[in-house]
Image 1 (cartoon, rainbow, N blue to C red):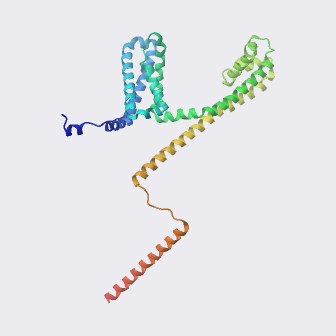
Image 2: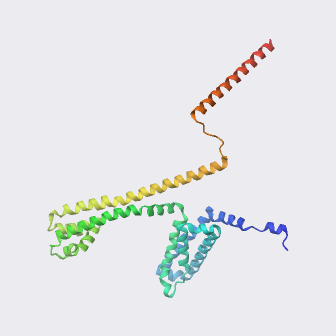
Image 3: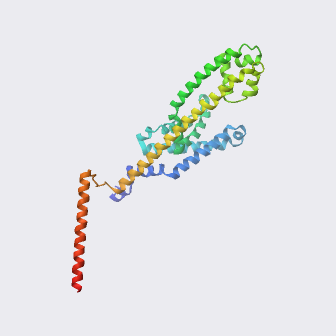
Length: 306
C-alpha cells in the first residue's frame, strides 16, 4: 500500500499540466520546433530532386518519419496542456491538418498526398508570432483588396472591348492573335499591365500601322500599373499598420495588468473639486499648526538656554 509520502511525491495532474505548459510555451521549445521545420524543408527539397532522392532516399525516409513523430508529439503535448482551448485558434487547426496529411500513407490512391507534405514548411508561420501577424494582416486586407480587384476587372473589360473595336480590323496574324477577340485583348492588356515585353512585342507592332496607339496604351499603363496596383500595396500596408497597433495595445494592456497585480488594488478615491479644495485647505491649516508648534518649541529652547 502506498504511504502518504509516496502519494505526496507523485505529481498531480494539475501540476503536470502546469509543467508541460511551461515547456510548450518556453523559448527553447519554440526554437527546437522551428529547427525541425527548417530541417524538414531541407529534406523535402532533397527528396523532390531526382538526384537527391536517388542518393539519400533511404536516409530521407528515416528522417521524415522522425520529423513526423516530433510534430505528433508536439500536438499531443498541446492537446494535453490546452485541451478544449486548443481548438479556439485557427493556427492550431492548420497545424493539425498538416500533421494529419503527413500521417496518410503515400502509396496507392494516396500517392498525390506525398506532394502535400511540403505544406509542413508553412508551419513556420504558426511558430513565429511575427509571421502570424503578417498573415493575419493579409487576411484582414482581403475585403479592401476585393473592392480594388472589382474596379480593376471593370477597367479591364472596358479597355478590352475598346482595344478589340480599335484593332481587330487589322488582318495581320499577330494583331488577330493579340486583339482578335475580347478575351485575347484582355490577355494582351494583362501582359501590358505587367510590363512584360509591352513595348517590343505589343505596342510597337500595333504602332507600325496605328501610330496613334500610344495614346491608348500609355494611359492604360499609368492607371493599372502605377495607380490601381499600388492601391493593393496601400491596403496591405494599412492592414499591417493596424495589426501592429493592435499588437502594441495588447502588449500595453498585459503590462498594465501585470503592474496592477503586483501593486495591488488602489485605495485612492477620486474627489470632486469642492472636496479637493477642502482637503487642500485642511492640509494647509495643518502645516500652519505644525509651523506654530515648531516656532514655539524654538522660543522655549532659546529661553531655557538663557
